[in-house]
Structure formats: C-alpha cells, structure tokens
Image (tube, rainbow, N blue to C red; front, top):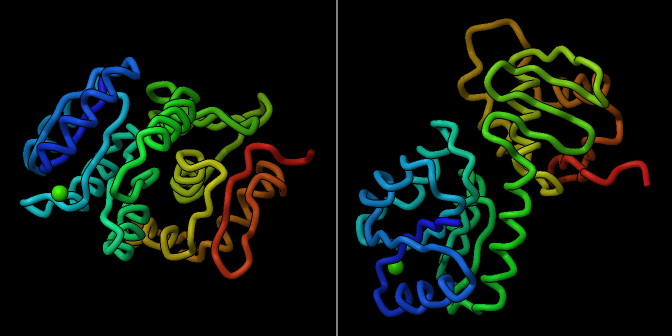
Length: 222
Ligand code: CA
C-alpha cells in the first residue's frame, strides 16, 4: 500500500520512511503543504500521514479541501504536544486519527493497521457497515437488504457517521456539515435528522453520547 507522508522534518521523515518500508508499505514523501495537495490528487494512496506543523502552514486546509472534494483516504495527523487545539481542529476538519510526537513506532504501526482495516470496509463508492449499505454516487441506501429512502441531509449525516464508525461526532462537527444546507425547506436541526435516521434504520444504530454528540455503533443490539 502506498502511503503519502507529509513531513518537513528530514530526520523524522527518513526514520519513518525506513520504518514504513520495513512494515511493507510504500511511503512517498512531501515536505510542504502545496506538494502534498498535488500528490493527494493521485488516488493511488491508501493513507496519508500529515504533520500539522508544515512550513507553509497548509495542513488544516489540506484536510478540509480533500474531504470537501470527497477524498475518503484515511488521514493520520502528527502533532506536537503543544498543539492540542490544532489537533482537535484537525479531527473536526476530517482527519481520522492523530499521534503526538515523539512518535512511538509500535503505536504508529497499530494506528495504521486500524485505519486500513476501517478503510477496507469501504469500496470506491460504497460504504458498508452495521447492516447499512450507502452508495456515495447515487445516494442509494439499504438497511438489512431493504431499500431506505433518505433526504439529502439524512444522506450527508449518515455518510459522515459511516466514515467515522464507533467515533463520537460532536454536535458542532455535525452542525458544520449543515452550513451548506440553506436554500431548501428541510430543518437544520441535527436532532430532527438523527430522529428520522433512527426511524428509518434502527433506533440502536446511532447512539446519543450525552453532552458530547452522537456515534454510529457497529456492534449494536448485543
Ligand atoms: Ca514540522
């Protein structure tokens, strides 16, 4: 699997490249945000490892732009201990996971494996988990092999949940999705759409995490 590594610290980058190769991956290095964005257009990468402290300061924009253009490749961000706030922003912008420097190679290996496993449950244009199948091209949805008809907003929410299964999505994160929703008559209230999704799928699929947000659970009813 090809991994796009975006890191401007040469020593750290070389160390990671050696390690990733030893793990059987094919890492390719970019040292600036601009380079990374160009390289990420190549859909052959299975994962991106992105340092948040880049010289041209583009890391968060890269994540947003990629997600905005529908790129679902997992993104693992690398942060310095002091960048707690940036780390949260990165996750809210669409990064899948983070590691704090100095990087522990065993932890890196484990995180990559988890992200790849999650990625393998996706095919190019279809997400499939928890009994739900969602086609990202034609928005066709099935739950336990039965067709489910979704509104545009329900589709967008469900897609977001399915891209991040078993992870809590904050209300703010979900509300940010709705920025582009003006101009039709559907409600903007996240609660309303969650309620409808539960009715159309199963009440157990989307769990409320009190005071924090919501989570799509892949192992429900057991
Ligand atoms: Ca850096």
